Image 1: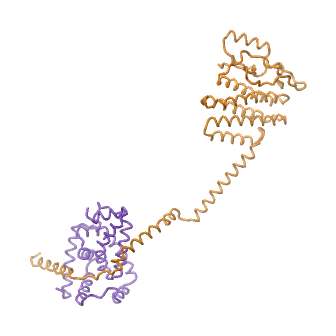
Image 2: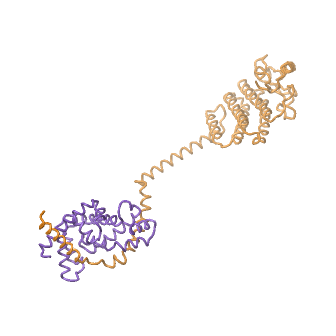
Image 3: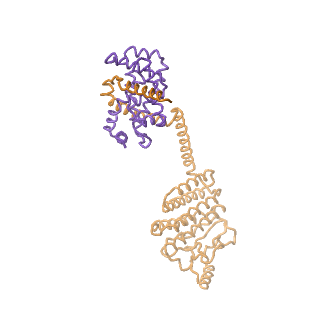
Length: 180
Length: 317
C-alpha cells in the first residue's frame, strides 16, 4: 500500500493530520490539472477546494483494492471539472473571454512564458477531450499511465495510445505555430 | 510505417514533451496553499452538521400529512379510550337482567386474562364472586328473577375458576389465600341460604344451583387443605329448612343428584365455621315446607351404604 492509501485509511478513521498530508501532497497537482482545463486561476483554486472537500466527505467510500488514491481523487476532480465547464458553457463563451482579458490569470513572469502558455492553451484546445485529459494528467498532475487509466475509466493500453496520439498532435500544432 | 515517418512521429512527440516540460503553470495563491485546508475542514463540519436535520426531515415528505395522520390517530385512540371507559363505567353496576351485564362480565374476564399471576387471578375470581353476591342481594330485594340463570352461571364460573386455579398452583403459594377462599365460601353459602327464602321459584332455583357449586368447592378446599371430612352427615343444627317453591314431595335437588361419596348440604366438619345459620328460618306463607336437607332416614341410609361400601365421604368418583 502506498503512503497515500495509508493516509486515506487513517483519514477515514478520523486522523486529521493524515488528511493534512494528503492535502499537502495533492494540492499542487490538482490545482495544475484544473488550471490547464479551466484556464482560470480563481476557478481552479475554488474547484480545487471543492475537490478536497468532496474527498474528505467521501473518504469512507474509498477502497484501496479498487485503485490508487490519487486516481480516486482525480476522478473526483475530473467530474467536478466537467460539471463546472457545463455550467460555464451555459454562461457563454463571452464570459470566459472576459475572465481571461480581465486578468483572471496572473501575469506571466516573462513574455516568452506568456507566449508559451498561450500556445499550449491553443494547442490543447485542438485536442479531443480525452487526449487533452491524458496530457494534462500525465504532464501537469504527474500521474502514471495506470493512475490516468483509473481516473478516466480506461485501460492502460488505451491511455498509452491516447498519449502518443495526443503528443503527436500537440507537436504538430506547436510546429505550425513556429515552436520547435 | 516507414522509418522516416516513425522518426518524424517520435520527433514530434519528443518536441511536445520538451515543450510541456518547459511550460510554467502559474502558482496557486496563498488562499489555496495556506488557508485552503482549514476552509475545507470548516466546510466539511458545516455540511455534516447540516446533514443531520436534513436526514431527519427526509424521513417524511409532507409535514402537513404527518400532522394530519397523527391527529387522526390520536382522535381514534381518544374515542376508543373514552368509549371503553364509558362502557366500563356504565356497565359497572349492571344487574343480570340488564343488557350491559354482558359488558360487565366481559371487562371482568378481560382483567383476569391480563393479570400475570395465578394468585392474582384467584383474588379476582373471589372479588367477582362477592360482586355476584351483591347482585344477588339486589335481585332478592327487588324480587326480580330475570337474569337469575345468567347470574348463577357467572357465579359458578367465578367459584369453579378459582378452584381450578387453586388446583394448578402450588399449595405453598396459596395457603393463606385458600383459607380466605374457604371462609368466603362459607359466608356466601350462608348468604345464599338466607336469600333463597321467600323468593320467586326461578331465582330460588338459580340460588340452589349456585349453592351446589359453592358446596362442592368447599369440599374440594377441605381435600386440598388436608382437612378431615365430617365423619357422618348430620342434620343441620336447628333443623334448617330450605324454603322455596320446590315441587311438593321432591327431595332437595342436591339430594337427587347425590353420587356416592358426594356431599351436599353437609354439616361442616369439626372446627369449620358453620355455613348454615342455626335456628328456624321463617317460611313463606303457604309455601310447602321442605324437609331439612339431610333427614334422619337419609342419614341412616347413607351410613349403611357407607359402611357396606367402605367409601369415604367426599370421595368423588
